[in-house]
Length: 211
Image (cartoon, rainbow, N blue to C red):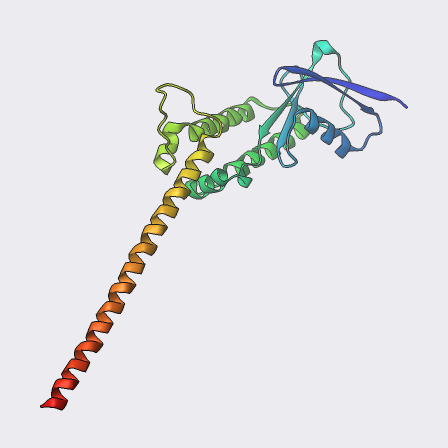
């Protein structure tokens, strides 16, 4: 059975994929997804040596190690993360949805024109720049997601936002406990006040009966 060998790189790491010429399209996509260690909802893009986007399908043209394609995971499934949901609510729109629309536009233009125009690359650059700003500590501060780092200029960990959200939940739980304590004290004071009122009425009734 005839096969194809596709040479490509993932994060600078050389890889190759071999599959039959009549391989199902989904199997080919799963093959590249596995090579990129991507999740089932992550978005992959494959670029030819000229930088144009090409479809990941059984119709991929075989190449050589000297003309490798480039595979990228351009968007993770951020809606499954707490930060992605909270960020979408805070911004009023879903950034991942915007990226998917841009991807659809790129695909449509690629099919119609054969190559991606410069204006689409500029749009992609602006979206990536916007994402980097939103994910930086300084720009998250206005959303109340700022986390002070003890090491001055040390770059924050990729998972600092999860620790920040966990801290926020702990603070909320602390506030809830304080509220319950205050509520308990309030109920006890109400009970004491009611008992004092009843005792006062009994005293008045006793005095009236003696008189």
